[in-house]
Image (cartoon, rainbow, N blue to C red; front, top):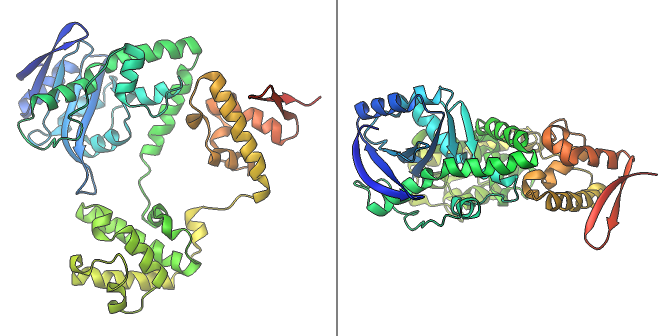
Length: 397
């Protein structure tokens, strides 16, 4: 890796080099060096407190050898990483949810082959675990995370920040190998591949402006007319925030959206005096847009249920849902896989109400629990209590 060397790191008894990449030439040289690797570990540092889109402040890339490149997105054109992302190199992440969106916005695409240690570890009973937890569990490595909340936009980075940034990627190859060894032993590699693909498909589903209001808890209990106003305001707020690259709360707070929707003010003076509305931060243009949006919401005749797709399931199924949840938890404990990743309450409701989109209808979830629940609701099986703890679905005699 040709660039300025920052420091040597003692990683698992070997010396690892870290390089600072802050010119396009250095990044091109890096890409030429890495293009022949089989796998690369990658992570990002970013801030999103004052913007709609996260502000990328650092990209870390590590080779299997332990060498780390720290790429400064303020000084280089990240689209130069495109050849790596479009190659057959496997990119190893930990918790890639936000990283992928940030990298796609900066590079233009996401890597064609991905692995996520957090997702994979969930199939070994460790759901939503932090990197430090997994490193200690699978590698016996304890790491310090003191610089996690530091300002990554400041240059130069401190030694503590550099150490932190390198630690986030330098162990990922070894962690992947340790996790895969267990997955292979248990026959769950295909399960992880399915889940990675499902997660990737979900990544490309941006927040629909028309559904943004559903993120505001206080709006869900409003009357039908108020919900229509909330829906209109939520969509306007989301689009305005995107256009100006600021957090939604900077446009209009959740409380303001809820109170305006509830009050349905017909005059500007009334609207500006509602709870949660910060009139001092609103331009005249914004005030007019809000009043226009309220009118649009009031004039709408589209039922909010059709927009939110919150079709209620029959209440008489609640005991069956709870019973199935208990059984799924029992199966997950027996298989040493986290119950959260196996099935949620909504997954079971979707299956019971015969929704085509039900996750339990196919793949590894169907094999593990879905087919048994189907047999139960079709009357071909029954649940037995075995001892004081175990629940079993058994064929009817």
